[in-house]
Amino acid sequence: MERAYVRSVWTSRERYIIRVREQEETLKFLVSLAVLTSAVLVTGIVVGAQEYPHAFPRAGIEKIFENDRVIAWDATWPDGVEQPYHRHRYDMTGVFFRWGPLRVTRLDGTFTQNDEPFDIPWVFFQPKGVTHKEEGVGTPERHAVMIDMKDGAFETHDLSTDLPLAFPRPGVVKELERERVTVWDVVWQEGEEPGLHVHPKDTVVVFIAGGGIRTRDLQGATQIRFYEPEDVVFVPAGTMHVSAAETGSPRAMFYELEN
Image (cartoon, rainbow, N blue to C red; front, side, top):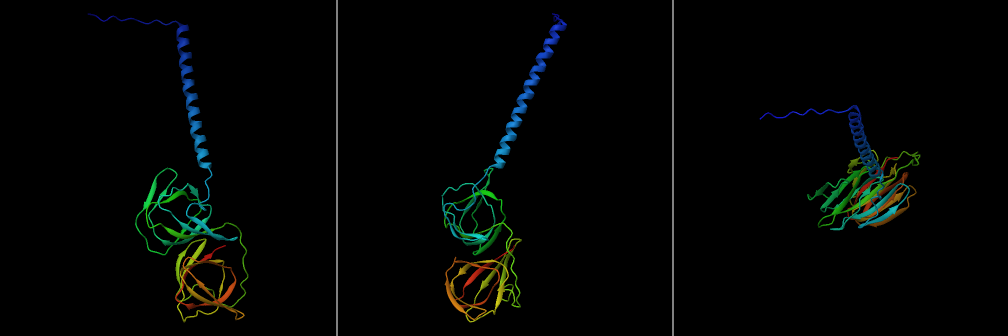
């Protein structure tokens, strides 16, 4: 049976109406696409501009001291305690005293979990701007002294002296060197005295092992102090003295701050 063929005949007016409707549909689609694109862009801008709290203080972290150069923190990552997202506003350095498993989650929800122990003490540096959250996920609980290094134009000191610099010197190990800080590992041996020296830069001292230290200044005044592990001391630039072990073999990390 032969298939019937029907020819459609459209008037000029009908063809015009069809074209107008097609144009309207196209316009509606383009408007919807523009609205969707704008919403995505605005959302991206809002997320990108979102302010996050500074990393410290938070659960498990207490301030040790603060001055115009640094903020020192006693930090522990409690097991199973949920932590907020935060942004590190300052370049940071410090030393880990105890390893513990830790999960670090990025803003996109992906995370890295550290279950492999590292050697203690572990000295580190982290640049400012890092945004994430860190949570303890087991025991032992990770523990550290963290040092925020403030931004700014800091005073330079006139060191008109013939005394040798505190570092480097024999027996002292350079543990880390970055643009903002150099870290020296110092052990005082009982009976040894390194001689008079000058600290040319503001310095944070974090004790790793305790003991007694005897210091003598240029005028001959002597002072004996006893330190425990994790004690933190600030030594201003321009300090001139000699230090020696009075009891035990104290050990400390010296964080020389760059201007």
